[in-house]
Image 1 (tube, rainbow, N blue to C red):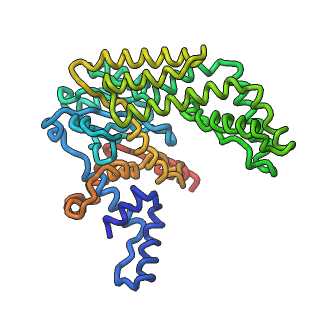
Image 2 (cartoon, one colour; image 1 turned 180 degrees about the vertical axis):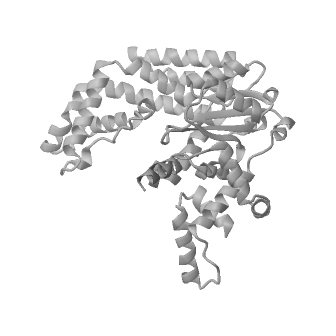
Image 3 (cartoon, rainbow, N blue to C red; image 1 turned 120 degrees about the horizontal axis):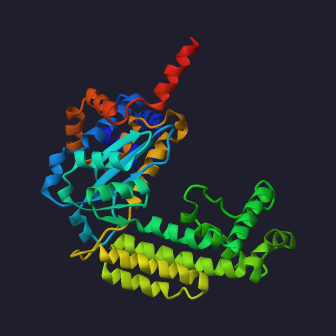
Length: 395
């Protein structure tokens, strides 16, 4: 029952209250003689499994590790710093990292994470001599902490490509005009009979990591116009794409190429062989604008190759930690006003072994007092608690 409950939370994205309702439905449907756990009980199971999955510092001394680090977007007045470790042996797999490859080292919240603070936490969690390198985006505080500690930094390929696209596209007049036309069409037609032709909504956060849907929509719309498949009224709504035909076609090919390159690197790792394969894909980019992107990507390749040293293969993606944050956000999406709480332990639980023997051992081993101790050390006062204390002044 505990195993199923935890799986429903971490893998299926079911809420804690819904897990309780699922067990109730199973009890009624199958006439089971089980006691239905409350949502609070399910919550406690997840937290205990999360605490159990952390390791002592000495655990990391028996082999070399790659670290993956990131900090979440702001939840209330705090940010969550996450540090995960991947054994170097995971390099040998011909597939992208999965949750079972990761060991959580740190989940800790703070109002701000300065380089010195991050460096201090890293020293406390792991012997730095066991760290081969660290993968992350180019956040200044993260980069500075690596410099302080003398750790080699491999830039996450997804964030790097996003930064390159931003550098080339952000101030381009035709790009700005095209995105404004898309926004105008969404605003005017979202609630009309033409809602079926509106372009996808663009995310404000990480805008340049999510351009593919916008240009894919434009590329398809050009094809539909060329085949004469629109009514006169529909054509009037979308005919502006003809003014941006060159931009749309060039950018669509560019983004499809970069997505293919990222897939190669994320699945097969960064090697001299995969780099050559990626460079062949870049040969598709021939116009002036995409040539700039090509040159900047080749520089990224050269810089990363210079960091390889004697290693034949590097991991270069932090997608797995982004996925962990995504799972956490889906758990707290119903009430983000509580800020960061010990619910972030669902990230650690996601990475834990869920086999029955390990699970049974963890449930006996970890007490709720251990969960409270972990919370006091790593989370401190939550926004929810701070708000409650504040409103008590009202009497």
